[in-house]
Length: 182
Image 1: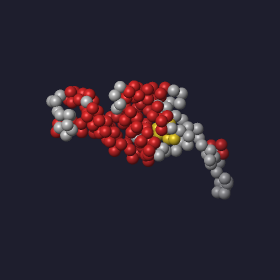
Image 2: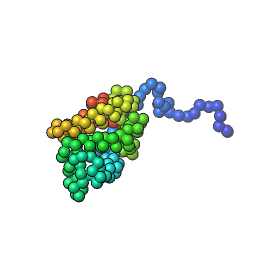
Image 3: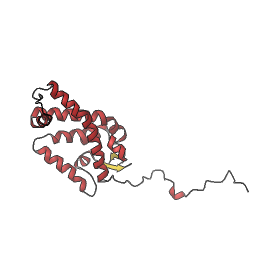
Image 4: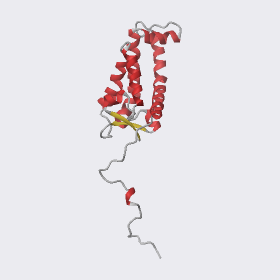
């Protein structure tokens, strides 16, 4: 006997999503977040280090002249006030040029996209507005990292917060965000 083309499809009704009901959110693992951060750092470094070498080679910034030694040049870039400012602004600019669009439009950097994780609002699980994802999570915290003595302490405390039950770093709490598996 032939199949009746007018019968209802045979599917389990409990598997169908209910409109208006949100599925439980699964937080990204600490390892996935670390991996994404490493991937993002490598990508930024590929552009940042050669650009810094050009700045030293051509003496484009007063106080950051080429010493002939790459290691000494790198030390100068973080040991002097002008070096700190230049490297912080340059690093932040490169990061935002590469990742900014993706973070605002998908809640994912290249590393987060590669590892299937996403930044969302802690309450609504929706994408964060640009001011929160870029301004608070990245720019404000990056500027705080540059404050002498306090910056290194803040950076350490920021990442140590990941070991809490909520798996939120301090910058997540400041931006009222979480990182989830996508």
